Length: 484
Image (cartoon, rainbow, N blue to C red):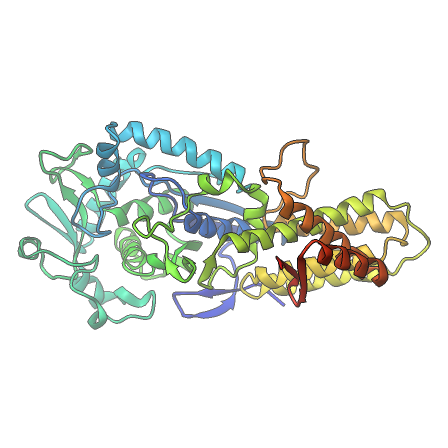
């Protein structure tokens, strides 16, 4: 079975075939660097990190670009409002680039902590102003943009005559809300040929701090322009994969697609596969600072090992809207402990004469690849790894070399999902210890005994816990407990 990915451009899964054999060129929308990375951002970045790791495991050479937005992203995600970086800098009494420098450093530290592979390039919008101005010139020269009072707009209706503007996401132009980038003020409507048009270059008012000279005005680029320009610069006019969040399906990515085709004056699709990751909710509600359910990665790293967070991300499908809770992190913690416990058991085992684990090694490689080939079904791949770890625990009487091969396979496949599965340094865990942890430890030991068929000893643990007013209930997901 070949790798299939859900392509938003066609609204269906299709077999992945790179433009150049053996090589993959990939662009991912990155952080607008005005605020800390939250759990939803990180879940999306983890999805594309897993995709890169899996492509490399399958033998592809991957060149991955993820941008850093440090100018041009306005508060209403359209052509109006304040620049998000300027607004955050003013509130913190910092210069915009002072804030950006601080936030970029923090972003890298947290991405490294979460074991995200470093991208080949992390271009910043402010470092590509010349290229963006030249791109706007090209779009004007090719007949798809116009200038009015120092601001340059993309002519959506002109583009629609030659191409299918809102094709990405399955929309038609009649479906569009007023303004391709969102709501438009009466004043702005006077400057546009059509309410669908969006800004490529925006004339800055006197209070705007971040602005650059251009042929049209002292101004700054529209948010959508940077990804078109930096993607084309580092990956070419046409490349394989463009990924982002579902919030990018409209208007950001249709605008990018239109800009890429207009500035290169091409009829071919600039990107073959558009991938989108779903949102994370918190107890069924949208994550929001005002609701008090907003969790940053910095928050989570205070209480949880980053590898636990990666298990959580790998346990949910990138296209499924998933619910975040501390209970889900605790479940992820149990899964991670299982893997480490298996690796420790193999290391301690003396081995024997059996060789039947060989078949399980072949089984997990086939099942893991089958799951991942189905649009990166990481939850299924994770469940298969857990099943494999149980098989290893039951077959510690196999030859030592086969046991070591099984452990190596568990590590190899786990690393595709972003896990490290390396020996922990003493004191490296950030998990806080308490009575609950000892109960979890006893239940882990009980599960091991049950897997080995030592049911009497397992029942003894359950009985002793009951004497301490701890009620244990066995479920399909594993044992659950509560104080009686």
